[in-house]
Amino acid sequence: MAPFRAWKNVLSFPIDRQKKNLSQQIENGIVHEISNGRLTPGMLLPGYRELASLLGVSRNTIAAVYTEMAGKGILKSVKGKGTLVADHIPHQRDISIGKIAHKQKLSFTFNDFNGEIVTTEVPPGRWQVKADDGFPDPKLAPSGKFVATYKLMSFRSTRQKKAEYNSGNSFRQLFSEAFRMLRTRRGLHMDDSNLCIIISSKMALYMIAQTLLQKGDVVAVEDPGGAICWQTFQRAGATLLPVQVDSEGICTDILERELQGKKIKAVYISPSCQYPTTATLSQERRKHLIALSERYGFAIIETDYNHEFSFTPAATLPLASNNIEGNVIYLTNLSRLMAPLNLICCVAGPAAFIKSLHALYYSIYQRADAVLELTVADMLKTDVIGRAARASLREYQRKRDKMIAHIEKHLHPLVSTNVPDTGLALWMVPDRRFNADDIRKHLLEIDIWIPPANLIAYSKHPPNALRIGYASLSPRESINIIEAIADVLAHLH
Image (cartoon, rainbow, N blue to C red; front, side, top):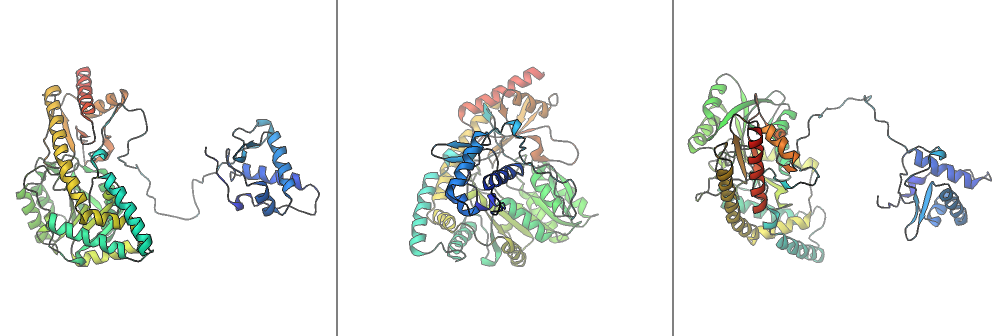
């Protein structure tokens, strides 16, 4: 543990200067601080003069106390660092390291958000191969350009006082460039009142749910779908209505039958690249969904996080491009190429809804990193992000095609997979003789990580499939993971 200089109030204990045993009182005070947990093993204590000034005693008194306690094994002196709490206090000293007694029941009530924490993070370990959930390759990100631009903007901001807290200058520039990007690249015909920028895409979905939904409202979701999204709506008080997904996206004919007997408040979809199956919503179903929304008056929450990774010659525009003042609430990242660009989320929709969303968002979060906002705005304006996205797309398409070729060579006909038009992951469906959970288990035993099943939500039966991100894998890793799956299938067979 790295030495940590404790704040003065950590060693704030009373001493009685009228008594002669000052040294013993100070030693007892330090022991008490160790016992109650405010001083922990390895923590750096104040220097002689600092503690002497705090307690109103002489420097020599503190030096004597430290020396005495070091001799007892309670403290230790390290040259060049100072005096620290000993890492291992002898048991005969009868000093117990303080631990917090956590209460099982509190005297006040609160909203209980306990439950399974769903995360895409890969746990630490010596993994041979780590296949993520479909994230970009950091090596293809414009990291150098970002660092250089951030340094430049930091210097300019300091010199021109543009980084003043709450000045709004940096946000206006970012807003302007994001607005221009959505109009030109995503085909959204809108004005300033139709756009809200929120830091974090998950926060954006959460705040949309809080703004849109009342307890008991019904939200139709894709089945299978993203567990994090389902959880977000449920915590907003919504009742979920899973609707089947096939190779053409959400089945709008099933949705139409449900609408005839239920009042649905919203439909959540990912039409360009459905999670987790990577299916693209067909044009016929897009038209049908919009028509149903207009007839029955429900909102469409449309996510479009993979718009930079579309491999089809003609880009498919979002549903929101039809009419920004219609029933569609549109979410997208500024860019998924790298962090922190992927944290900046754009929400576009009817002005009245966006106004309410603004009010909720600004009540809890008003200012971000001004230098970061200026950096991202400049990278959008100079098309650094756009050029990097176009260059990386060719590499991602090459990686996708090679992964598909490996699957055809080593896994066919035991595994079938689609060729996604958009996105950076593959949806692999093994033959009915095999269970996807068994495959995951055997891969973990040989230190190969693939996304866990709890990332995928479903209504009745878990989908017997594997979702594997290919974009961040090296050529060797792609071959290794496919060959490993082939060995597992041979073992299970």
